[in-house]
Image (tube, rainbow, N blue to C red; front, side, top):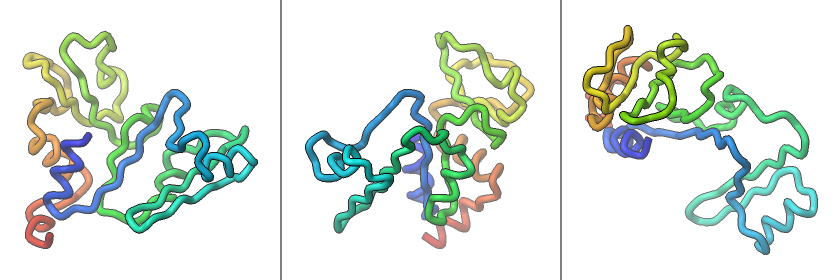
Length: 156
């Protein structure tokens, strides 16, 4: 994911990412004012500085938001890369590593449009991309979503 973000941004394409965390997480630090505001019951805490801002939204028993709801909260960009959200119906690129214990999801999930892998002899009815070839993976993504890499690079 990091290599793809770097590649696309070097081409002048604006990118955002969305990552699903299966386990609880916290971007805040105990003892900080923002942490204390959340502990006191604030629904949302927005922390801002000259370099960035972060919005923390406490669900407090509400259902976890779906991918569409989360995407609607993002600022407009040319490309959003999503990690996780396997149950959502968006087109997916599966990363399949040699020695992995998980079965190949693409065999049962038709929303997987390609597989990036380090397994040289993988046979499946979808495009198979070399896991270490960022340019090939990025080109596939760009073609799939209708991004023109050549035009983006010259504009950036």
